[in-house]
Picture 1 (cartoon, helix red, strand yellow):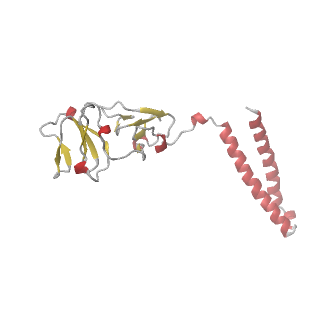
Picture 2: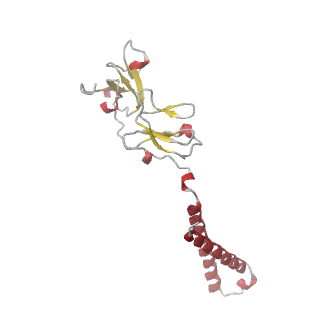
Picture 3: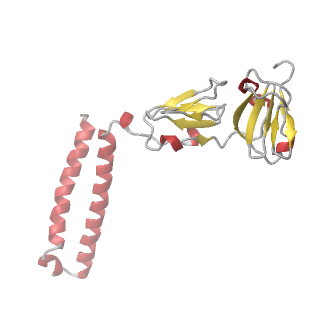
Length: 213
């Protein structure tokens, strides 16, 4: 152990001895015989020593704890640029995603079309990993052409905020509150890509440029 840590522990131990001696004195008859000013000063001294002990103990705990073993909280500021979501797997590892991931048996999985996961780190709190999904507050929730994954040409937001990517031009169904492709129900023709602002969902359709297709 480094010298400064040893000195800090020794200082704490010496203070603790003086602290206990003063505590015993405050409980004695001799203390009651002192004048009011001295009693007040000694009581204030005891409170200060108590606070100092708390600080020393906390510093020692920090210095003697292996910080790599401290479990962390997943917060939005850890989501890297270009990603919209992040979540913790059962093993405590956290990943960021551009598109909303699916909850799997013991982890979160990228959408089948999007191999977009980015490793954030490990040793995160995983007791409630199945509810760990968070969203970045920094990205614009309005759907844009940049949100259309490879292999798809269009995307639109439904009334409930769910966005879908399509191979072919979808049709607005106001009665149902969504966009769909008539007669094409095979899974490879459309994909859920995330949650977006639905305030103007009827006008949310976006298309890749010809150069992007």
